[in-house]
Image (cartoon, rainbow, N blue to C red):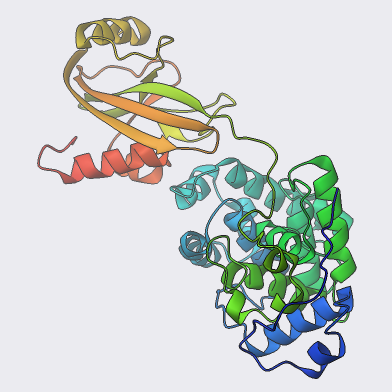
Length: 386
C-alpha cells in the first residue's frame, strides 16, 4: 500500500476562479479541502442529467443501481424508464411473471441481475411487508445487493452516512491521492472504502456520493480527463507526477474463454423448437434454440450435424436446409461464437424440456442478445422463419 507524496503544489489548472476555501488550503490540501471543493463543484458546475438523479424513492434508486451494474448510463436509461412504467412499485415487480420481467430485461445482459432483481423484490414483500427497508444492514441483505448498491440506496433515499465506491470513485481517489494499490486486491478494496468514508460529507451524504460519481464520469474520466476544468487539479498527485494514465491500478488480469455454440432453428407447422436454459451457465433462465456445443470447438459437416440432432431429439425426419453465421457476442469472461443451421421437420410432440413456440409466443420469450437479434433479422427478411 502506498500513497505518493505530493511535494510542492503546481500552478492552478482549474478555469474556475479559486474560492476562499481554495486559497486558504492552497498548501495542505487536507481531506476537508477535497470534500469542500467537490461539493462546491457539484452545486455550481455539475450538469449531468439522469432520470433517477435526485430520486428519493428507494425502490426506484435500487432499480436504477441494479440496471447500471456493468452497464453504461446511456444504455440503462431506456431500460429504467421501461421498468418504472411497467412496474411502478416493488409489489408489482414482485408479482410479475418471470418470463415478462426477463423479456423486459432482454438485451441488457448479465441476466443474474434480473434473477436477483426478482428475488429481492419478492424478499421485500415477504420479509418487509412490501416496504423497502431503511436500514443499511437490511438493505445489504437483499439478494444481489452489495456494499456499493446498499450505500447508494441508504444515502440517496434515507440520508445515511455511507460512502459509495464504484469505478468512478476509485479513479478520482486513486488519482488525487496517488493511491497505487491495486483496487481489485483485498487490501485495495479496504483502502478505497476507508478513504471514501473518511471524505464523506456528513451533512449531505447522498449529494456527496452523487458528486463523486458524476465528477468521475464527466471530469476525471478514464481517457482524456478534463484536468484544465478540474477544481482539484492544484493538489492532484496524478497531475503532479504525470501518473494520470497509470492510475488507478488494476491487479488481476481477465482470463477469457472462447466457446463455439451450434444452434439449430428447428421449424415445424407448430412453430420453432425452443427451451429454457436451466443449467448454471451463461444466459441461465433465458430461452434458446436447439443447442450443440462441440467439445473440439469445430463446426462439423452439415450431414454430421443433422445426424447428431436426429439422435438427440429423436426426430429421424429432421432435415437441415442451410447454415448461417458466424455470429459473435463478447461477455465478461467469454467470447461466444455461434453458427446456426435451419431445419424442417413434420409436426410432432416436442421433446422433453422443449416446446413449440409460434410467432406470438416467441415475442413473449427472452433470448440471449445474439439469438434475439438473429431471430428478429431473419423474420424481418424476405426468407422469413415463419
